[in-house]
Image 1 (cartoon, one colour):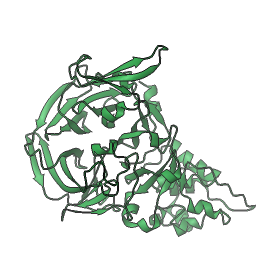
Image 2 (cartoon, rainbow, N blue to C red):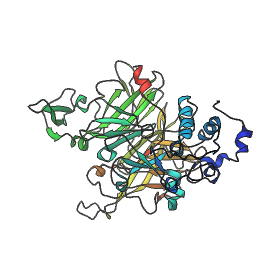
Image 3 (cartoon, rainbow, N blue to C red):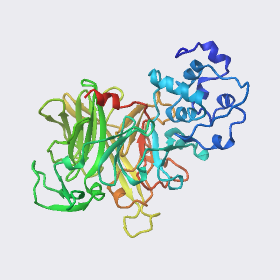
Image 4 (spheres, helix red, strand yellow):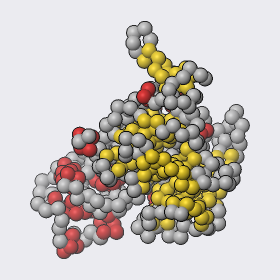
Length: 471
């Protein structure tokens, strides 16, 4: 059994590569390969991680596994996961493809959101291109995530196919919604500004959250908070970056007070505080360096690999009021870009009806960052590139490599602080056209996914456990 097959064998099955994008549910070519008595319910319910649908018919021909593997290698992960739920032979082909590491297809980012009607443990994937171009068909895949229910958590980040979440005790976990792998990050009590409080039985019952920014915990301005309440004040945004020089992964957390930074290598038992008080908003990891942009627009660079963290200010910015939200992103060519985003509030009355309390993106500015020499230059167009910003690790992609996305557009999701307190408000999910400074809703009718906030994620089959075993 080989991992590839000849062009002639695939051609003899009358399967065209362009028709492989929606394996079971949208592609006539492959739909014809399904057993004829496959239940109609399965064809309608696009459910990842669901039970296998076995159909046994005497004499029904099966495709050779190497042919299936070659077909599956061209699918995006949501379609691949739906395919492997069809029957045992398709699951086997997927498993072989994954085990032999022959699945290398570039993935289009997806919008992950939850649906109350689908149940607490179910999330939904909607391809950005489907939300944009095929909304009438409501193209989505239901995805069952590991316990506890994702709706009970805060989503504080998304990087490289993993979600970073804060649970009901404010402890953080990374979750791969495709493989269902889940890894706990170091305890929140190892963050400098958090002190545990135990009851008479020795059980953790509260946290003391200190706004003091000195290195040692202090009793100045402390605040006692419940276990689940801490995440409302502490965690802002999180990332998981791969460091090629060490073969390890680094978790980076932007947290209050004052948007500070802490980091931990996966496998560590505590967070390391970076001590700067700069109101950081976003991070990117490039060539072994962590770059973080702060609320005044300045960019700091950190080398986290040595026993002592080296820090350098590489760029500053003066226009601090027009665009209150900042992102930093690496372009495909390797350059850094700074993105400023303004949101307009339709109604900021906290007592207003939720249908009128709406944020939407009103302006986006983009700047190229040159680290040598230190310079920030404004640009008017992304040309043939696309940005995706929100609570996720910011992404810049080539529209030529991702033809489902619109060039010179920015795909936005909500990441405003108000999300913590106004869970029932409509989310800002849109496509912002830089050419005419206008936006259109990504979902029509608008997506009212209230909690947790919808987030961009690039699906991945990568598992972290082998890496952790080597630490």
